[in-house]
Length: 439
Image (cartoon, rainbow, N blue to C red; front, side, top):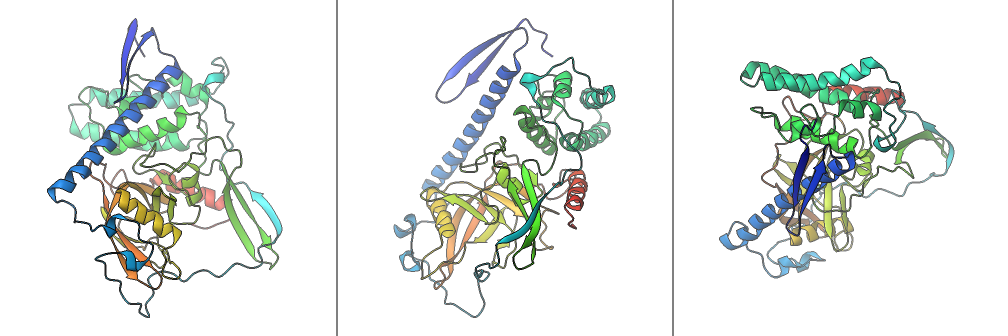
């Protein structure tokens, strides 16, 4: 709650500065615009710092010297100077190309309902604050604010703070999945408005003498960014159409796609992480496409011609990948006639531009990989390609060495803040049961 008569806020960026003066309480639209401008400025400043460090490293010898041919986009293995192609052996460097599928004509199909609860979408601007709602739901949300009050009062006790943080951590997961969330309840509790008992309090570290753990800040920011746009549907497969049926060959099939007019779909064609949050988790790859984390429902490399790779999914599939957490060796896809595949060219362009690439890890990774999520996919931050090798000249199989950029929160693969959380896994099992699938 704002108790001052006037509130002056500075919004600054490298290109402009602006002073906004609010009378009494800022409108919700103005607060969202301020938070958005602030988020953009923080990300731009962080990206500029990364770029400056990378540019500076070119003059102090932190990166290996590159020949002139290395700086160009090689179309064949012969164009790569200083890289000795390895001869092809009987052991493959990637999975064999899939044969064209036959019998794709569908005979029967039906849309499946995977919801464990039914949700009626509505949002802030059209809220009738006088509408009825269960008071028990209101009190449940207000209890979240009371946890923040306890955190401030217990700032001097490490043991009490640890217990309160654990309760906040669990409560944030419950809030993202609970089926009684509605716009009027969010409005009544001021959960996404600046104040002492809201989500911004956590991710902006606004409580005196309280330093929220990075995973709590991340989860609070993740929930805030979703709710602030009006996307308060808690369903894991929101915006996803799931179908099953039989084709002409009497083979059963299941498919998932994004609703044609789903208004919360986010484009994945951008550099950097956008509004993604380290540790963000999705049950299916199509959900990562829905939220702009990746751009391919099945493919592992997403990019554009001339712009390079935007994101990759680290999974199984028979490739000779190596995952060491902060460093990765990641294979492109098989080329033809000594020419790199389109996806591989995206990676080569990203290397030439030294641009950041979003990395998602899949549960399809080997079970012994400590960074493998238990289910689904998890966003693990931005990486840059330092070098690459050509493993096989005949198929133009490239393998790229990626390094995680510094200044990011740790990968959330273990500990109290690991993703997916217990709550997410429980909900995932329920959804899969609704679809008639095991987990």
